[in-house]
Length: 73
Image (cartoon, rainbow, N blue to C red; front, side, top):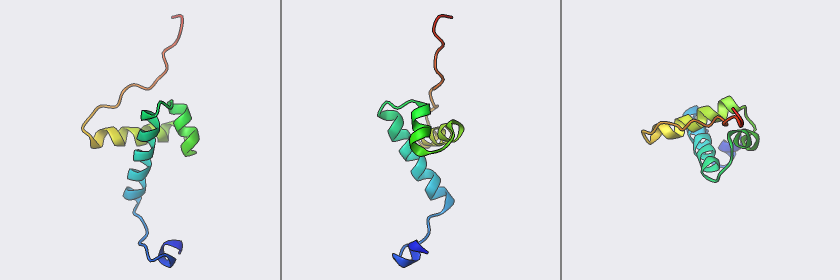
């Protein structure tokens, strides 16, 4: 309703996902961890990882491993 009121069309699911993937990628490039990205975007780390993967795939790149390294082993 708010989109129609402003004379805008409702964004598609793909457009919303693309916007979220761009936001996740920007947060990653700013130095945020996966956990911080998921907190900022108010989603699970699995969802944040999916958005990041989408952003890397659009560039034809492989997403880096974002798991933390264990210390002392």
